[in-house]
Image (tube, rainbow, N blue to C red; front, side, top):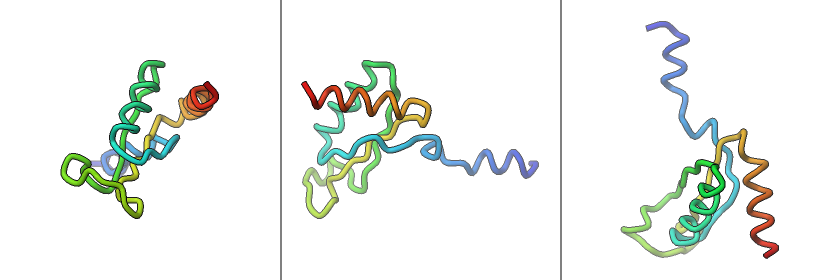
Length: 86
């Protein structure tokens, strides 16, 4: 395998995504994710703890980062900002 192909394989999918929001639990994260997806913006959820195993928030353990593609980040921020104003 060539070096160029190897580098592509090592690249994490999250590297093309950018954090747009931090939620403090799976319910809030799913609501934000659904909201953004309803506007055509794909999302990834990333957290330190599997929420179904340990459904609590303490010292940042319940923090879930919502990631969107870099190209959609600005639009996602605008949508979330307009949602908060309502």
